[in-house]
Length: 349
Image (cartoon, rainbow, N blue to C red; front, side, top):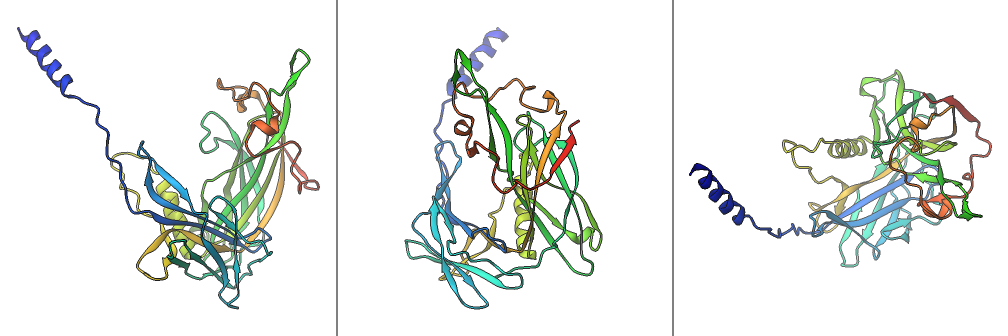
């Protein structure tokens, strides 16, 4: 009797469960701005998009803006330079404008709907000009849990009696292997170099090291996809306090554990505001930074298959195709610019 009662209740509860299509959030889109101006020959880059749009799976959709007018302004001289649309949502300077330490810069944005946005002036803070490779270890690259990589750490002497904020960004070409194209009755292996994007936010305040030597600062983890060289350029940037606080908040929100007890992420409002309504802020930040760079060529030796894709069960080599065609942003030969860079030869263990 008791068993029959439980069975009836289970059938009733099961019959009440229905698949319901949720109404996904439709909030007013917000302007998102990602901007970077450096004191080297790198073109100024501004990326524009709208946030607040969600697909049927509830994921946020990035909607790039291709019909805006964007100007870079030198706030000290008053001169402005119009940026050019290079690819979807990305506007760049094409006239060789280079920022200078000690000067202030801002951007102005005119959207096709007539809305106008501008950034607060960013003053370029001089950056520490010297840093050296401290060590090269082994660690797991972000987003690649089945792989190991070269953990490159730098050291530098922080100036005393002043407050400094740092950020590190990198360019990295790593060795790749593909099964290649038919070669007789088999396939000929092919090799190339793929541009690897390490998007980890790497920042530092000198609050705890003021006037001391900065040690063991990781600037990139270059993955060991296959045996071969790694061509890396490290750029050390200076930050204003406002830029550091923005990236610190971004870092905190993107490294949360994601448990139900975490607070909801706040909108990352930066230094971009509506000209017609100063209380209306855009998301993102326009950053102007001094920069010093260093190129290195890593030449790992005695690297065991354990550290590469040869060890893991998931092979990502394609069935056919040229190596430089099947991997996104890959090139056939070693990248230009590293020809005279001494190799750092080291053991991987």
